[in-house]
Image 1 (tube, rainbow, N blue to C red):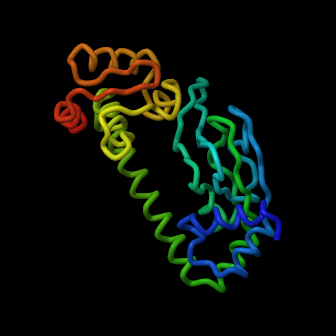
Image 2: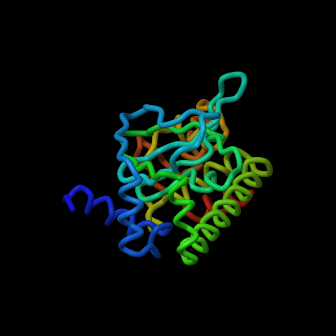
Length: 227
């Protein structure tokens, strides 16, 4: 087996979704997969296209998004390195991608044959359970996000985002995506995000300089995240 294939199988083993597969099953997944290299902004698939693959992010970041009739982009989810997406669609009778997907930076993904993986699940109860657990987790996450987007203010959403994206609770860190992406993810206009960030700075709670974030008052930020 080539070093390249070994790296891919190693990435599969590190993914929660594939962690219970045997070595022969991992080899089967590898043989029914393809590596796709994407440049920043490049589309992987469009909403409405027929599902043939689900994906594992080997490096970089992907966004899943929909475009409203008036042309506004709504980011549904950001998939980091090691994350998978579109796996639940293999169980639909007429599977079509309900969202579009594009690279947020130069990204490499592994496209896994959905029909072959579905057939293989009959031999792996552990993987079936992992897949169910992963889908349940994502459902709970989406329900929580809907609550946040519909019941909370823009300031609350921004405070939540900063708190949940601070690595290990650090006070200083770098944003890993552009502010325009964050605005789309939080369903606020870029100018609204800028105004919220400006207000947080004036209050002495948070300073954002370029992509660098400094949280000056964690307690106040947490209080805002609950409003």
